[in-house]
Length: 209
Ligand code: GRF
Image (cartoon, rainbow, N blue to C red; front, side):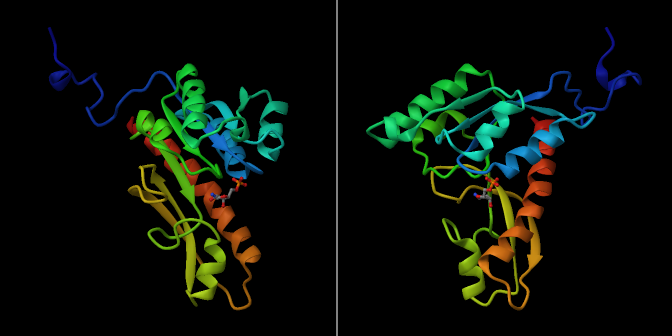
């Protein structure tokens, strides 16, 4: 028998051959522009991942409407139908488990997640956050960066862990904060970088899986 190590026809161990695309589930709550960027990137030749489903906690989220209209498997689970965070998270986890997913990409999913959702996906769940973590975890990141007089801001893709916006950072993109920037103008420029960064990181993580 010939081993891969001494067979010149075998790929090196570092060049893993993934025959099946990674199945990614995306969680959203709003417009879903990051989700749309991930979908567009998944349609590129040789993309190592596909968007298997998009789930939202809001039925009227622009992103879930768009995903449905574009033939993507969608699911709405309204958090208001549950009496506790844990019960909602358990229901969402049940749905995600049913979709045979490899990775979860949180993309503007505006819920604080409990262990019911995080633990089953630990090491397979990513998030994008509009700041240069560890700066400005939580909300209103652009206003806080401007108020602090920062010269630059940006976005971070990180692994999701139990603490909010606290998991290991995988990659960041930076943008300058310009004189006269408002939270809205800064958000627009950061969002452009979010779309590029998230697609690139998800592709790399999918290849490495
Ligand atoms: C993005 O800035 C994301 O980083 C933050 O919420 C925003 C969502 O935008 N968590 P979209 O729904 O992807 O357009």
